[in-house]
Amino acid sequence: MKQGIRVYLYLFIIISFHLLISSWRFSFSPFGSHVDGFWYHKIARNFAEGKGFVESSVLYFNPEPSSIVHPVSAMWNPLSYVLLGNSYKILGISTLTARIPALIFDGIIAVLIFWFCVKIYQDLEISLLSSLIFSTHKFVLASRSIGGAPESFHLFFVTLFCLSLGIAWTKSSFFYYSSFFAGLAYLTRNESLWSILVIILIFMLKRRASEIDTEKPSWRILALSITVFLLVMMPWEIRNWIVYGSQANQAKYSLLFAREYYDIWSSGKNPEGLWWFIQEYFALGFKQIFIQKFQSLYYKLDTCMQFLTWPLVLFLFVGIAKNFKEKKYWPAYAYFSITYISMGLLNSLGQGGGWHAPGALLAFIIPIVVSGCYYFGELVAQRKRTVKIIGLLLSIFIFLYHLGDNYKQYRILQKNNFKIGSESYSLEIEKYLRSSTKNNKNLTPQQDNLTVMTHQPVILNFYTNIPAVQIPTNDSLEEVMRVAKKYHCNYLILTGILPSIFAKLYMEQEKIEGLKLVFEKTIPNIGIEGSGDRIKIYKIEL
Image 1 (cartoon, rainbow, N blue to C red):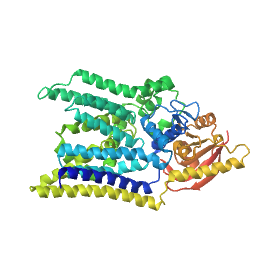
Image 2 (cartoon, one colour; image 1 turned 180 degrees about the horizontal axis):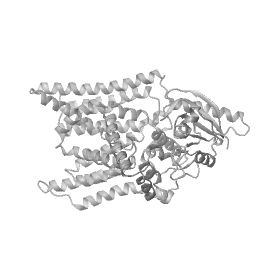
Image 3 (cartoon, rainbow, N blue to C red; image 1 turned 90 degrees about the vertical axis):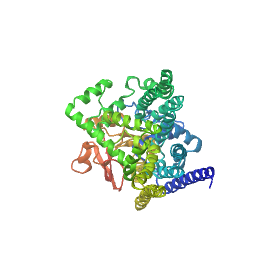
Image 4 (tube, rainbow, N blue to C red; image 1 turned 45 degrees about the vertical axis):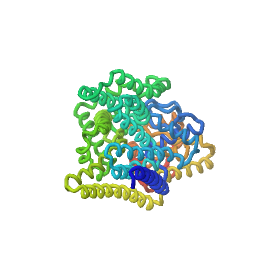
């Protein structure tokens, strides 16, 4: 078969498989995500419904919102809900329309992987297998099925950033494109702020290499590239200062300098700016800070393993040995290293969050792994045909592993009748609260008169539209009651032993004045961090 015909045939296979595997995953995956994902989708839906870019729940208290419905904070960046909101406006609000942007973006990436591999390896089989494994990878497919925000969008813009910066090795004008995509990546996830360091590093390496073989890129190119990056990302930062003033980034500071993970949900701090948070953090002492930083770096490596899966890790270093001198991969290597170190040292909490580079770089990691499979064949065999068979079989195994991973998820959801606990829990609470308003003379049936306080309120608000407030994690009952009074909360909802101040109450080891248990029910797989298997609703009697 002629080369040109094979290219079009393989592209047809890639696109068809992408649509087929996505349709299959969509058919059984209930729409649901982690708390951040629900937050993005809720804001996007508020925007599509003409309410503006507003939050309709209170998740963070730094700064403390004056009302439950308030302008979007500076905590997370806006591009995901801008894209989703416009998709909802054009196509309508539904589970399907929530998934369409990620479906399109991932399809574009699959085609770009094929093109990228053809340029580097001149091997259509490596190109085809890399694209198919990408479309099947559990992180990509799971993110796509839950609506993709913000992981799918970050993956898309980081891919374009690294691709264009790789081309900048031969065409310096692509530094401008890479800066533009870096800005968009930052507007999707905070960690891509460090992509500007990647641009500077690649520019300096090119200047050094150009002393030998080609013309040096001018400093003007770097200056304009940085300008492009700032022009893309600064309007968002300016907006935050206009809306929140000196309190604009307090939520980010709270996350970066939290002593313990759940401190990010504490209230009543009355911080005075970045220096206040730094002083609070350094009060831990050098020893504890060192332990937290080491912990953070370790957990992020653990996150890396979860993103990549063991078959990819198995041949990743073989592939790096094969491809290390290929300069088009250098932006991906640099982005991985710089963001790992910077986010690991800044975000010192004992968690893997805040750093998604392994997932965002899958468009480069997977081709490295597939080429590593073929390189492994070169190391153990001499005949070209045998080398190709070994590489092909290993790559097919990796493809089938990820396909099986998705089938495993299908079986898990099948056991739960394809429902997720967070939706069941939310609807059960709504059912009780709606009925209670009809039977209580002090409350009208209108939804606005219902306000609840719970752990991770965004999920409940997403499914029910009931205004919800985060339970402060100060271990201060007085502070909890202050917040409840400020936002006129009628009910306290507990799903487990978090936050710790209500652990004994949840386990029925104590009673608290002003909190009356009015409803409880067993709901397995609630799906909220720290949750048990029962929901408990308490009437707040202030």
